Image 1 (cartoon, helix red, strand yellow):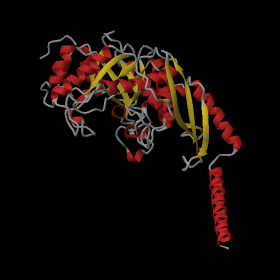
Image 2 (spheres, helix red, strand yellow; image 1 turned 120 degrees about the vertical axis):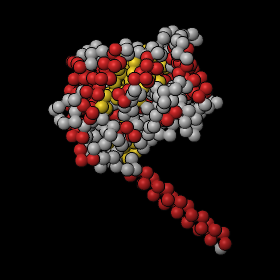
Image 3 (tube, helix red, strand yellow; image 1 turned 135 degrees about the horizontal axis):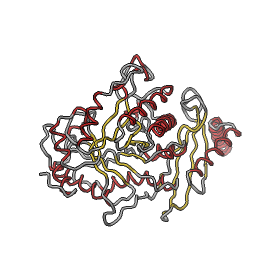
Length: 444
């Protein structure tokens, strides 16, 4: 009897386990999209990944996302790929995608991850210098005193980067007031320095919520044409600018104003680029101004993924260069060159896959700070900036190097007060003297 009872218990347990497995399997089945829909998504994803240059693509699974996206059911797929990049450099990577309702109401791929290679691809760095990069600093130059300009001028810069805020020019719709930028332009050009301007900050009337007007805000999609008109008017008025960037760090929610949307940025970029091309085809228009994030999360799209989607959507191909902000993100006593090169390498890998290695990279912000919880000493900051400068000299792909920033000033994060090469009063920090020396100048 005891043996029979034991057998009965075992059978009951097996039945329960079987029931549980059946329930789990049914639950898993409910998470899968219908067969035809899944096949369509996989087919389109295969084409998109192969168009990026990826080989041996294997799409393992597609499941319904846990949360709806923009009110519609979305599908998440996981994929793998491996092959050989030019060089040759082998790669083996994986990523995911999200398919659902796009910001414009259509249905498509909201995001497709960039190839995350297990063996990181490094941008080619020559053992010896191959060029002298065009050079400059980023700052709020329109509010800078003459004494700071004199110190800046002694470094023989090519560029001064700053925002070209649409809101500051078109206070009232249809009326432009260029006064602040006229003065800055004349001041810079008279010194032989070209402005490098970042078109940003939509006027209140062009923002998504005009009643809650925000600084640094992007325009609503229906105002992209007017943003293009503004950019075209700017390049006509200021023919000697060095380049025009379209928005600042659109892959970061902090500047985009919410979860970054590569599809909307691509539309914005193409609209502005086409308007500038008609107004003055000689002005370089730069894609990206990408923040240095290596991973995507709820508020950020990684620089590599954002660039890859920019290619997918045909925006990068219309640019005259890709601008990026490869801050090393290190502290004192740590290597700055390796993480700096790695951030460039993330973009370089995407460019290799796209067979687009002739397009120049512009570094329009990079630096280390003497302020904050990971502050460099002034001497360590000087050494780090010189190391970055000397590295860029050995990377043929990088056309321009712009440090952030020229003078110490308050900003929107704990490190901002210490990025300057001169302090807030204009006194030279060791970085100012070191950068001058590495450029062959006696400034201190």
